[in-house]
Image (cartoon, rainbow, N blue to C red; front, side, top):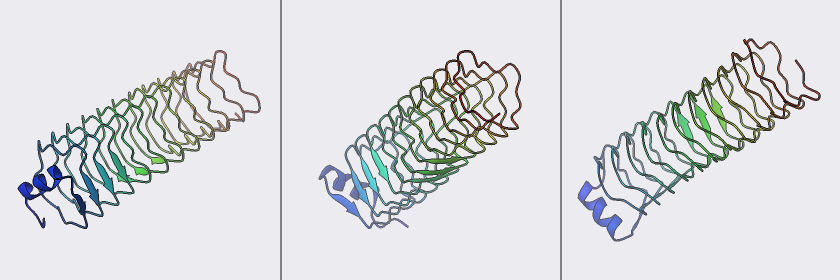
Length: 244
């Protein structure tokens, strides 16, 4: 149960107070202006943030599971070392958000604007990114297991040494991305576009590749065994040392 009311929280945010070690579970913070708010080690389980305005806000080491955050604005916010499991953030503005080292399990990020976001070393499982935009984002070292990236627009992505095992990329656009040493085993890459991507030393085994576009991609030393697929496009791809 929350230790303070919505009104108390709004006053503290307006005074630019740092909110630390507070239990804010279950509060209704819908539509609340919280630009630049700072939360440290707070418990926000089950809190509602629908349409909340939280650009430039900072959440450090917070428990944010089971939150409802649809259509909120978290542009250039920082959510570091938090747990956002089972939260619904669909259709939100998250451009340039920093989610480094954050845990997301069964989190809904479908339809979100995530351009130039940072997920370095984050741990994600069973998350939904379908129809989101991730252009120019940094996913280096992230674990994104069994996630849904259907129809994402993620051109110019940086995802070196990332693990996407078991994920769905059907119809995704990942052109011009740097994804060296990443793992796409047991994935569905059908109708996805990896045109001019650097996938050198990556693993793409036991995956479905129907109509995937690898044209002009760097596939040097790629491990691509026991894949299935119809009419994959490898025009101009470089495949020195690839294991097929």
